[in-house]
Image 1 (cartoon, rainbow, N blue to C red):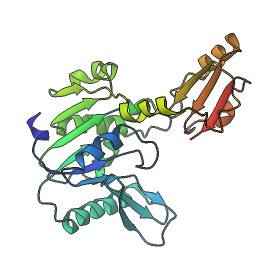
Image 2: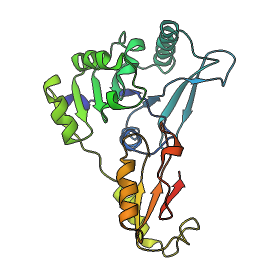
Image 3: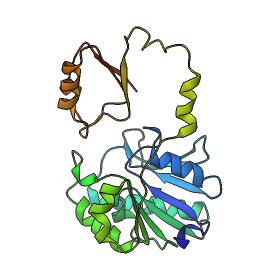
Length: 255
C-alpha cells in the first residue's frame, strides 16, 4: 500500500461525471485534492463546440475537472488518438513530473496505456459489465487493467470475492456514508415542500434509480403495505421512466 503514500499528482479516469451524483469518486478525490493535484477526467461531451477542445475547471473541492469536448462522436480510433493527445498536452501544460493513474473505468486504457505513471490504481466500484449498454471491449480491457494495476480496490465484499483471483494486491473498500452530511437531517424540524403532504410512515431511498433496482420488489412492497409511503429521491438513468411502478404510495421526487 506504500504506493499511495507518495504524494504524486493524480490523473483520474471516470465513467461518471463530477456533477452527476456526489458519491465515492467525489468523496475520495475531494480528500486527495487537499494535498495533491487531482485531475478528474470525464468521458467526452459532444455538440458543445465547433472544434475539439479540452475544458478544465476547478470544483469547489479543489479538484480539476477535465472534460474533452468534440463537435460530434468520431470513429473510435480517431477519437482515442485525439484523447491521447489531450492527455499528453494536459501533462505537459500542468508540468506534471510525477503522477499516478486512478481508473474507475477500463475504457480509458486505449488513450492512456502509453503513459508512464509512478503507479496505477484500479478502483472497481461496480461490476460494469452488468450495466445496460456495456461496451463489448470492457471485459478484455479490464483484464489488461488488472495486469497493469499496482493495487485494486473493490466497492464491496461481494465484488472483492468475484475479483480476488484476478490480482495479487486487491482489497475490499466498501462504500459508506457521509456521516456529517446525513447527521444534519436530525436538525431539520420542518418537512421540505415536496414531502410536506406525504403521509407517514415513510420509507426513503436516496441514490441513482437505474437497472440495478428491483422495481418489481418496490411495486410488491407498495401493494402489500398501502399505508407505507415510499419516497424515491434521485435521478432516473439508463431505464425508461415509463417502467417505474406507479402507485399512490410511491413518490418519485427526482434529483
